[in-house]
Image 1 (cartoon, helix red, strand yellow):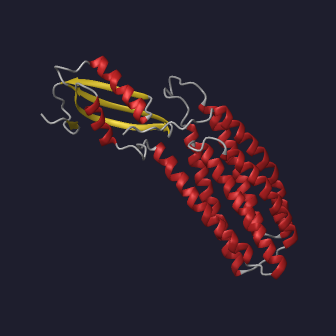
Image 2 (cartoon, one colour):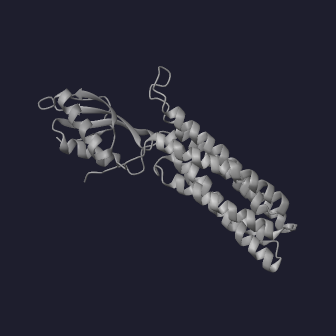
Image 3 (cartoon, helix red, strand yellow):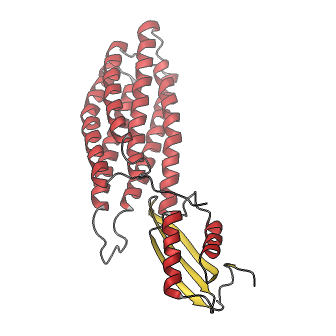
Length: 303
């Protein structure tokens, strides 16, 4: 069964515009939330302001990554600069993990020694922050969802959005009941939600940086399909599949050709067409061999 992995990805310029607009919104409101957190004494607001600071840095890095990734290949980086986006996503994921650690540390201190919080100031700032974060998230969410750079930026903003919701709830509880521990408790809840997304981002981007094969690709099934569909191929070995990004896949392989029916040029064209059509692998390097090969580890047709 053929696999269609074309997702209609947005152009990089569109993704870049979305990141820049989100950067403007987030960077501007970060200062408002920082001042509001200091005036109200709220950890939830200060944590969200700290998160917005890293968001500003993350969005700046994402914007730089989109710009750098458009640079053409050169003699030093023959595949180009597209993977800089993955590096940016990895750094963004690590920064999220650091934020989670800081929030948890501060929350424990505040549960043990509750601090006075001005609920009314906290509520006003948190509500305004929610509006800004919703706008920034919708802008980024409308971009290429398979692009790890956009995904990393959107996760940062989603964490801010959750932080604003938690701050609003905490402010309402404090205004009505005066129970101060709700502020650090909800901060922990938000931190744990961020932790799951951050780890997923770090894991996925690290997999690409380590040149892992796509999760959806069954390499053995792909080899069997090639041998069943392309005449003259009697064995396949040295198969390597990885990606510059999750969307830009690269493959290398050795084909053993039947001496009677195998025609090198026509066979390679047929294999490349199958790889592109069924697996969205647009860049493949294929070496052909006749008769036997010193590497017996590949899949071979039975005699």
